[in-house]
Length: 387
Image 1 (cartoon, helix red, strand yellow):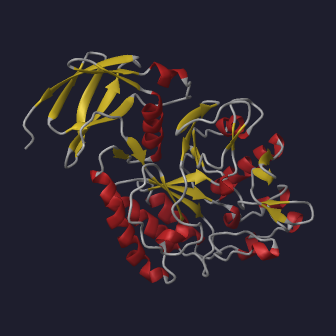
Image 2 (image 1 turned 90 degrees about the horizontal axis):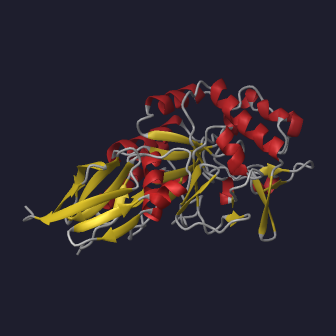
Image 3 (image 1 turned 45 degrees about the vertical axis):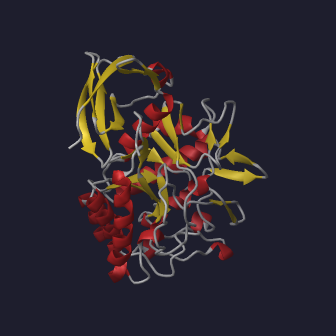
């Protein structure tokens, strides 16, 4: 039974490795791992994700890889992006249905949000041999970052390829390839470069994340203005095709990969998506979970959930946001989501406004909007008979 007042944890679906056309994992010949699918990807694979988002009323965050969208062979001039080096030629092999896929992405922006996930996901040395991953490479138990000027070249080329394909949308989130990432508040690591290009959020499992010069955050932290959130451990391996959804719910971001929602036969993608829709709808009645309509709201809620202090009073409680503000995120919403037993009706002081967001079986969820970034908001509760 749900009995307490809480700031619920944010739930959001994140899908990696979207954007590949060839599915085959070819690491054995120093080519990319891609999605591990034994077929080529088709525009219908994007429709599968769009349908998932539409049925759930959620904008799905998709880690987008753009190397096989390179119609101008830009990667030939970018170090460490393929085994071919200056002989890279994607223009002669570009998929004939690329415009169709582009149009699906653009016409489904209400349900799909593309995140920076790299050029070809991996790193290639001067001899053409690959290693994980594009922005950080592992050496023993440590990661080393691409030189800053080359990292900027990778990111700039990423946006140039989007522009070449008329993929005109803001990119606000970054998903580290292979989850190789270093959390750092100084200006010599990737977060400082990412914020130069408008990235405001990072989603990665904290279990594989390293730190440099600071303590590893718990669930969420802020580095160079970027809100970085813990995706936690993914349920399935990256190349698992059409798995059955798990029998339990995950209390965090639900990290996935593109093949999880696809079928070997793309005309049967809906069969796979149907099973996931049924599973994910279960999150909407879970107390303590906030199914966020988009990644931005999920990230902001994660920041509030981690740093807001809740102080009980005789008639209700006080929310203390001083530690949230102290994190110095470059931008975050004044909206914070609160859940309480359905029989309790809240009112707040003049420092904020509250409206009912939704009702579950045992709880009610409210959105509280801080006025002028008020540091303290007092909430009074009274009981009513639940209908």
